Length: 144
Image 1 (tube, rainbow, N blue to C red):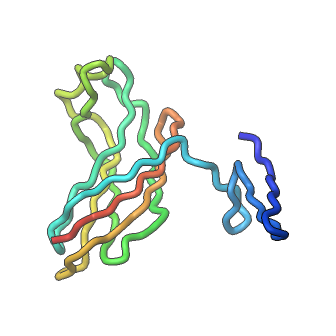
Image 2: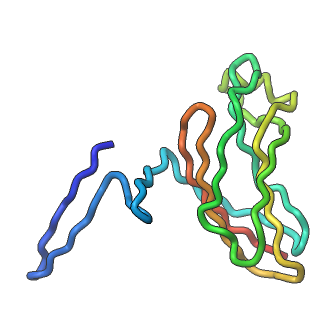
Image 3: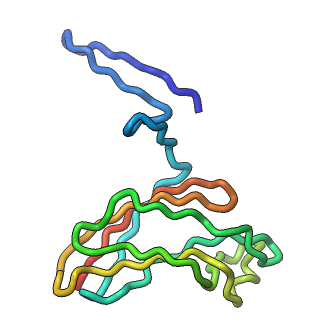
């Protein structure tokens, strides 16, 4: 992506914006390919499965594990990332739908709140899939 600087003057004030690659701590931070938001539930103090990240070929073999980075830690709990196995959940028009009946290698994400905490929590994950697709997933977790 090519970065560009756009300057705008409104009412005598200079307003500026930078689009492209953002900078944080002097390092380039690429923009995710896809940003999605999710709402999940969890029981207070219990380890709760949130989702999996997997990449497989049409013959159901793994393309390799995804890289999951916690960008925003939850304020009232922790994110647990583990390598494991999971069932895919491809929809009917995906060539990989036949793989849904077998476990495949996956990165599993869990959330666990502080014991006794009840309320909303939030976490943000950046995911780089084995295919190279870059996702940012934002989760609101309703802890009960």
